[in-house]
Length: 138
Ligand SMILES: C[S@@+](CC[C@H](N)C(=O)[O-])C[C@H]1O[C@@H](n2cnc3c(N)ncnc32)[C@H](O)[C@@H]1O
Image (cartoon, rainbow, N blue to C red):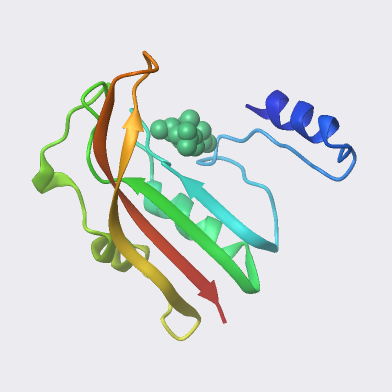
């Protein structure tokens, strides 16, 4: 993925302006501040301190910046792991678990949405749910 980012940046004449880094986020992370921190389907088949990583990520957001978190809220039929719906947190639970200071964070969006996803075979589709949380740091 890092090499694809670098290649895409070069294709667009942006080389030298993109710093693509690879991290095990339980150990190291890029240091901000950043205007946007975006965690897209940050799930792991191994046990990690996901909340801790996300809290550290939120801490890298600059004042006025945005923290965008998109989580799977239902497994696609082709997923490597099927989940008990009772084990899937609501967007509100995920937001509360982050424990971010409400005086410092404005919630722009915190909701479950549904979308049509296409499977790895390129033609099978299914409706899946995502939790979408958008926060702005004051
Ligand atoms: C379900 S994939 C999502 C991939 C991609 N973000 C996307 O939207 O298609 C889960 C991703 O979480 C990331 N991840 C999980 N554990 C991680 C860790 N310890 N450090 C860094 N990234 C991790 C990896 O990038 C992995 O590909």
